[in-house]
Image 1: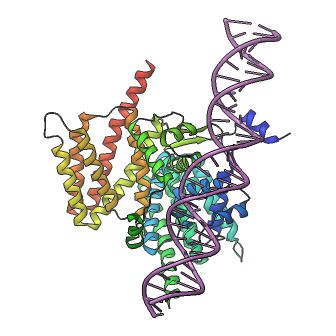
Image 2: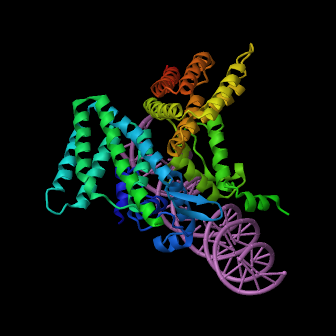
Image 3: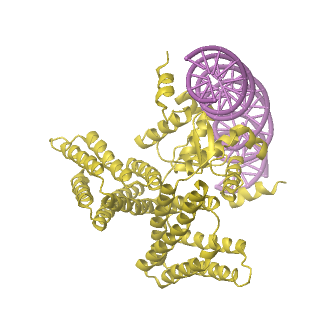
Length: 235
Length: 235
DNA sequence: GCTTGACAGATTGACAGACAATCTCAAAAG
DNA sequence: CTTTTGAGATTGTCTGTCAATCTGTCAAGC
């Protein structure tokens, strides 16, 4: 017997995955991991072969990504992985700073112990990833993702949550373009710890400030790298 | 000869409307105007008959609205016009306040005369709509929409722009649930004028403050009305 | 009378196939 | 070398089909 049927009837699973959502998520991951590169055209039939699903399903999944800004569809030319200019990258970080600043403020105001605990756990794991001579970048990325999840979820605002997710996705995509920066990790760790402390202390203004500072520092590093790689490409 | 072909080859028209985008826009308008009510289920075949397009196109349009949060699709039960709880409405206004505060700040910082001019024009028309004994609500709504468009576009941030549009759409949808409040119009006019003045003067902090104040005042009015209508429904 | 269960109708999820409109790119013509 | 033309590729859209799932009704049982 199919176990899923059983679960659905008893536990009332909310999020029954449909083919289109699975495909959409797979495409998202492929884009963020760099398998599908920015600017690359997404030919529908190729995606059908890759995923083994029909064109209608592929197209519906593409509409979801389109609305997220992950792919750009121009009529009669088809969808392509979104590219981002230096100026747009600036705007992206500015938008993220605003929203994450708000999230930090709200976390501090609400003072949910569970949120602070989750952040603390993520920080511990993040530090642990750097305890060895050879940092475990995979574990570090996971820990950081979890920290952000706590921050974003902790603000108790579904709209801010929904808006920040695509922004983070596109920043991940942005990092693919340039390279990952292991050097900034230490500084980043200090910034994130400061966020946690501010939130735990319930200082709203400080929490917002720390979040904005962190995003702006990340922006400087990322934009600098993009600028450099662009100049390198030219020269 | 087809004139459109000519235009496209020469002017490179960006936004060639496709059936799915037309349908999506039509549905958006139908939802915002109250033709399709919150909670109402959207049966695909009915939408086909209404719009005269096929099911796949309808479905693609629905994915776009789904990503905007305009409709809510639960697997195997189909899409329905999004409903919003009182708590969610609070969160919606909070998110709008953050983003519009940023937009105001940026408009003040950038000091684009064209933006100030456009806002001024919208304000003039907004005032004119109230110059008669019987206010022209239609004209007022249009003027206000134009004012917001100037504010949102003036911040020069495509991400903030893209995020604010769905929020405004859902607030419009929210107003349908409760009734429109002509009484608040005068107060609202004063608030909006204050935003304009702050932006024109280039005072970033003040512009942000005025935008946040305005949204929060609108939130109080809207939430109060929702609460009252909800209580009325119960009693 | 109320709950439970089963059945039929309705609806969505997903697929295959088809065709016109449009884009792209390379070869041919000037 | 530039422009034009044309073939191939790709998207936009439609029709039709079938299985899986939901919903509401109606009868059976407590």
